[in-house]
Image (cartoon, rainbow, N blue to C red):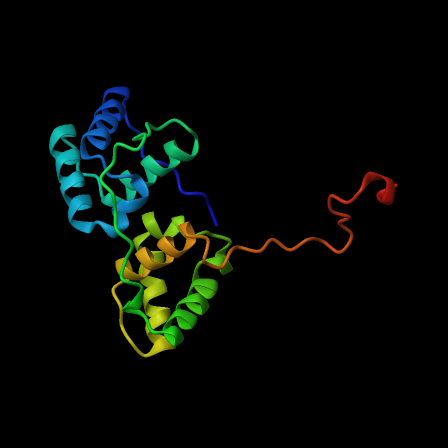
Length: 176
């Protein structure tokens, strides 16, 4: 799978996006769970920058810069986000969501952040979940549940398999 490239922004556009981000005071990882605020942010960005970007492109740009440590932090000066309603899914549907997540996201070698900026992936997760659970749940809600669980350390992780001949990081005396 090819890596997704960030949209190109001129330096003045990058600065405008940063200022808008700081003004809104919403941590980037919360926008998927705050759809109205994301829509307002995108509208304001496109209006001020005289552009016609989609949310996925802007969000991917922000995440990419953040992961490179080239994005401003809110240093605690953010609008807090309450946890989603965990009772949205009964226990058996949580199992179905984990199975869907493993089949759709982990099978591609991706993590939960990919759901935040890839609407097609998020929609595919929702379709797979509907097939497994027999119930249709909006993809933004499923994404919010997955990301919230991951941030709490309660979600399944991508497992990297070691090669059979890999000795790992054992004691050097035992390896030699």
